[in-house]
Every structure is written in C-alpha cells, then in structure tokens.
Length: 335
Image 1: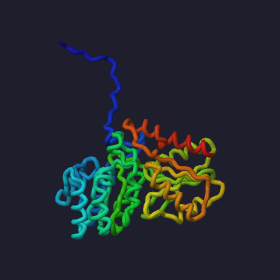
Image 2: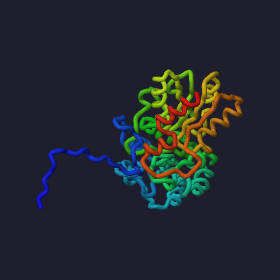
Image 3: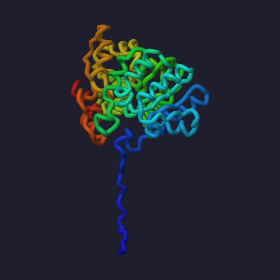
Image 4: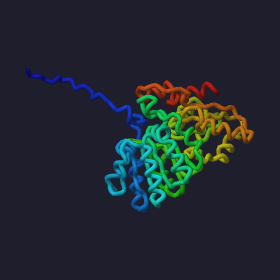
C-alpha cells in the first residue's frame, strides 16, 4: 500500500521526560550543563578533584566531566551508601570528591552515611544533587521537597541553593575553596540564565539584593529567585514595588543582611522557596526575625506539607503556588 504525505505539515509535537524537564521558559536564555563544565575548569587547576556518581552521570551533568577526566571519574553503580562512604574515604586520603546523585537519594537513602562518615568527620566532600524540590514530575519518589530541612539539621554541613547557570558556575569554585562538606541543590541540563542582568557575584554565606521596591520584600533562593524576579516585573506593571533579596546560602544564613532588609518599616516580607514550608528557608528566616525582635507582616510561599502529585511541571507549579503568576496573585492578596 502506497502512503502519500499530506500537503499540510503538522507542527512537531514537543515532548520531554518528566525526569529531566527543563525549568526554562520558552525562548529564555540557557546554558548547557553549567555544573559539569565548571567542574572541568576547576579540575584543570586542582588535581585533587574527582567526580563520583551512582549511575546518574548523564542526569547530573557529570558525564561531561567523565569524558574530560575518565581516570578521575568513579561510577559506583546504584548504591548511594557506597557512593558516599567511598567519597569519605577518598577525602580522608586528600582528594576532593564532587559527588552527584538525585536529592532524594542523598537526603533520604544515604542520610546516615553522609551524617556519620562525612559530616561528623568534617570531610572535604562536595555533594551536588539534581531534582531539588519540585523540579521533577515523577511524584514523591523523586521530588526532594524536604532536603533542606534534613541537611539544615546536620552539623558541619554548608548548604547552597543556586538560582541559575551563572551562579552554579560561580558556586563550584567557591565550594572548593571552602574546607568541609557542602550540599548544593543542582539545576541540570539546559539551565536558565538570569543573574547576568544584575551584575551578580556569588559569595558563600552572603545574601544579595537584586532589585529594590517599597511595598514588599521577597526573600528567595534557588529556582524561586528566578520566579520572584519575574513576579516583581509583573507587580511593577501594577505599581507595586517588589524588592528581591536572593539568599543562595541556606546555611550559614546571612542574618545581618536579612534582618537589615526586614527592618525597613511599612514593607511586607514574603519568603519564597522551592521546598516544603516545614524546615526550610521560610522557617529559618522567621526564627531569625523572632530572635532579633523584628516583626514585619510575614508570609511564606512554598510547597505544602504533603506528598506532591505527579504531572507536568508547569501544572504542578501552578497547583502548588510557586509559578510566577501564582506568586503575583499571592503577593497581591497580602498587600
């Protein structure tokens, strides 16, 4: 049977894996695998750097490092406890392991190994974990909604939640300069480029004001800083001035900068995070303000204290209130 083609060309159907779905909007500038490429640049200067993963090199952007430095790349198989135990041993011998997996596997499956063999021993292990918060549509098994709460409670652990590709590129060498264990939430694949518009420079332990505004202060980290900046532009069109304070280092927290920003009278404070409202940035900021006796009108935007649904990321972000439009709506309702 002969098949003839139609004279009308249908538009190609756009599909993507829920596991590696991009958080970039259509047409938004991106950079490919910023973590992997930044690690290559670091390794060229630092011979002690090694890369390690548990069968997830491709999905944590460590595969580009493996291609460049095959003799410094360790694929440990689907055994996360072994992965972190091995990283601790290498660190004890003077190496600097950069270890990747999914955030759910580090924070839940291998927590005790990280706690006992890395944090307690203050080993120089750098942990970079993909699919933080609600960046996967695969449901609770792969959505690390509580990773910050778990690692915030771990002594000796520094925690970083970068916003975009530019910040990831700057964070990697900063992690190497800091001695001791570090946990970084990793955005992988085609990562949005946002902070280049703001002449941004990452400093470990420092919060940075990205834009000013008289009506509301949005304190945010990670993906939600990108959303906060988008929301601020939309709010500006409605004559609402929104200031955005980016807090990439969750632990140690930049208490001085946060408190100073929140002392400004007559301005509501909203903390926005891609994490459960339990135990993350919002509760950390609230505790700081309580201790410092600073009491602005205070609100939080974050994921609910429940197991999240599976589905397409834009739909889930709207459903759980962390999309740009959802943030705009929430801020307006509080002013």
